Amino acid sequence: MTQSASELSIGQVVERTGLSVHALRFYEREGLLIGPVRRNSSGRRVYRQLDVEWLVNCTKFRASGMPLATIRHLAELVRRGPGNEDERLALLREHQRQVVDRINELTSCLDLINHKVEVYEEHVSNGTASGLWNLPKAIEEAG
Image (cartoon, rainbow, N blue to C red):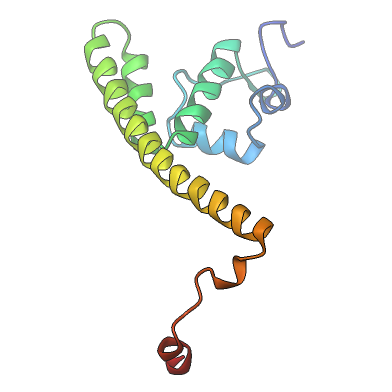
């Protein structure tokens, strides 16, 4: 039996998502996919374009810090079908809030780093960098 145009091999999914075969099988084992993975007559996994789109979403969720348990819960809600959209929205809004908080924290960190880079660049270009962050003698001697 030949693979239909709407069926994708594991290699094609790996290519389209950037996931490794190991990661793809892990996602499947952990119940993170929104539908069951079918097998063709040869027993090989076949995926749909919908699976690829969901996996791309999952990789972005993970990259943004969403825990696997939350992705699994979202996948369960999607699998249940219509009627739980409010719960899905609440889950996504909470994660959105966490991501915004993390971005704000990282922005603050970046502001400090940018300031330090400017200070060091100025002192290096002026030849005055040797005095930056010199430890007091008492600390040097204690070390």
